[in-house]
Image (cartoon, rainbow, N blue to C red; front, side):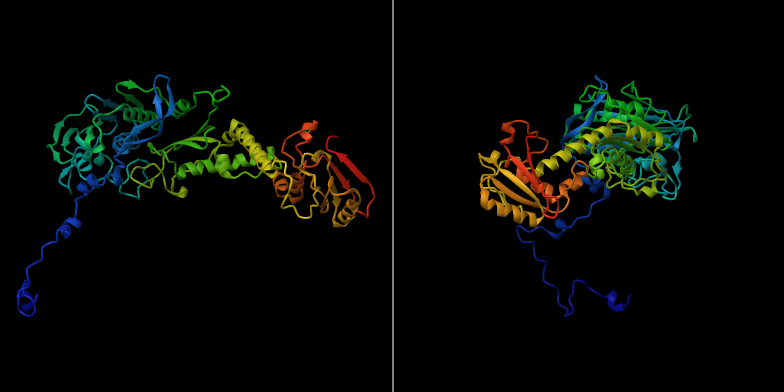
Length: 557
């Protein structure tokens, strides 16, 4: 620094005079310090919780809930706070993640106490290392549960199939709890650990370290700060939702027994779990057929017909991806492609089906392990990782695909396609008896067509304009009240052999339907039926350069 700079007095202006005193902030105008503020990360999380755990306002929506009395999953409206649900889920997924670190882990115990508003999640398997971190100068459990952005999941060079990812997880539960307790035992270091945080991670006790370990475990106990969620207690709806997540954990964690409030959940595998959704019979009273396949150690897939549009229940590394994602798309796209091929063969000439139309008849269940998954938010409802980075493939067997193509899904798609075809064809016929018809070029309409005397009218169809001229000249003799003329161009489409698309796009067929006033699928067997038409008879005249035969056809024949 130069001497000039060292002698610089910030309160003296260049002309040597002192600046005028600072002006006071005008009344009603906020000071700059009030407008622009800096918050610590902990303060920011508490101030803007929706960025990290979702909304802290109660919402009402339809969700899958376990009905323990009926032993089925049922969809019903519940009111819950997404943020509270999320912090519970972070702890539960952490417990399930331990299965990937220690294959010998086989038990998770969840306790929800509505009287004390306290929740605990216990799991066996390798405990957290009870050792001091040399760089951070604190015990590892203290670091990963009490300090933000600490994680064992930062090494992207390592392929991990766990739910943790960004270093928030359990810390968010700690921050939104009035009390948070970590207990773990680690046989590797022959020590156990216990530490307590209070007041939104604002206060912490010194860790209790004991020597001698009988069994590895980790237990997290927390009392949510319910005031942050505008609640006074753990109500039935949120407990029901947490209960469903306990069943989810039992289904998505292979060879892991899950206990809820001391009771072992009756879920041995993913297939058992799927049956909870499909046990109720369909509209015909028949049990919903499930097709299941254990594709490989990282993929399980089950499929059933859906009468409520596309439905999916999926898990990525024990995370409930309630909004689906690319793992769901990858499986469904493969199945839909196969179904479309089968439907084409069974419905030759029918409408061309689009993938989303077939998808609407599918109920898919997926349990998968994805390497280093990514999500569109910290709430992890939608998995966004590209298919090529999954770390594994879900190649469904021919047997599975064959079973799907023989299932009720195909019949459902065919019925829908037929219904859609009929609706589209129905739109081509107004079904209304119109006196004046517009938009049909070259039609010479009978004056009485579409009136109360229409049954006595005859429509003359000619092969080309030259034959039309002959017919029109004849109207000068018989009059225009009872006779109309319409020219056909070339060979008329054979609708019995035509495809659905050909019929819809054929102008002449659609014009004839309009001119005659035909209604799709209606049979004209009585006089009253005939009276609904614009013409009661049809006459066909061959072209003049062919055999001159006049066909007079009655629509009642």
